Image (cartoon, rainbow, N blue to C red; front, side, top):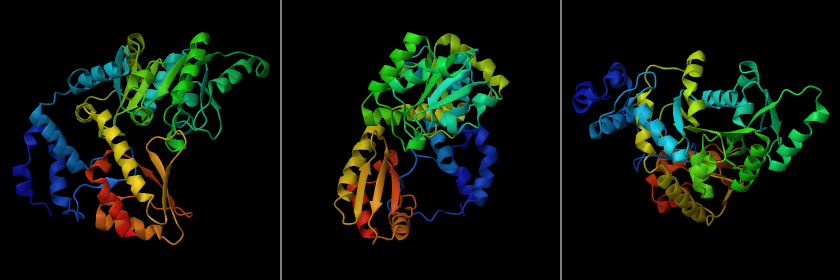
Length: 388
């Protein structure tokens, strides 16, 4: 057990008064971790480091000691305002606003862009269509029109055909409010829409006066794997949402960027829908801190992953490949004579490397993220060799 007296003595608790109520429980209930060798854990899942509570608090203490964190009040001022300004610059938009979740950012953006018009075109595999509890339909009176079933993205030609065929298919016109694009797509294992196709969609939508929203929860992955800057992606959209916990380490939160007039109206909408919270500084401070250098870390992780997978592909019984139009998710195929369950257990307990459980065909997805930078490529490769 953690020594309570030593814990309080050695922690910079004065830096985090809001965290104090949590610490006695942590100190009294957390057993010492049975940490495998080699220190930090490589996690071949997720988009980045997801901190445990104790690590999160410790890092916030270090951030506060180096540069005191200033709190916000209902999203105004402090670390939240600093984060919003930084994202506005990164995306090239006039203004940004902190929101409680990506679902809220997507839904409020689409509703605001659409106005009274009801139709919103989306990918069939998109988060907006599949994973937001039909909020667009049940709360915002929007009719989501899915395109390209089972595919990561639709083409500009498919969108144009769907829109221009509406007069033949429907008697009453209710108007096209917006087009929403998720890039990359979680349900399609991180596959992304090529920038050339985005440009075609954007050009067509502008010619028709249709607004465009980008669900860019994982846009940093798309940028690292495609080489396309964040601002270039964002330039083709009226609004852009980016997650704060996918690779920036925050425990929650989202940023929505767009024109000043639209973003200024979001505070009222957030209040109406229960998303106006008194204090958001713990998440904003973490994201703001880890935002520095994130693009470089993503690029380095991509290169490290490529180095590791070249080595793994030289091992008998292992094959690793990237999906078409893929980002950070690769497919690991194991031969029938390799016990995937035992391989997973060995990597975990002996080498501090986490992978998912292989499926019935002995395949598992490996997500490349910055935790891969914790171990040299040669160590990861040798860990697989030894585990097999």
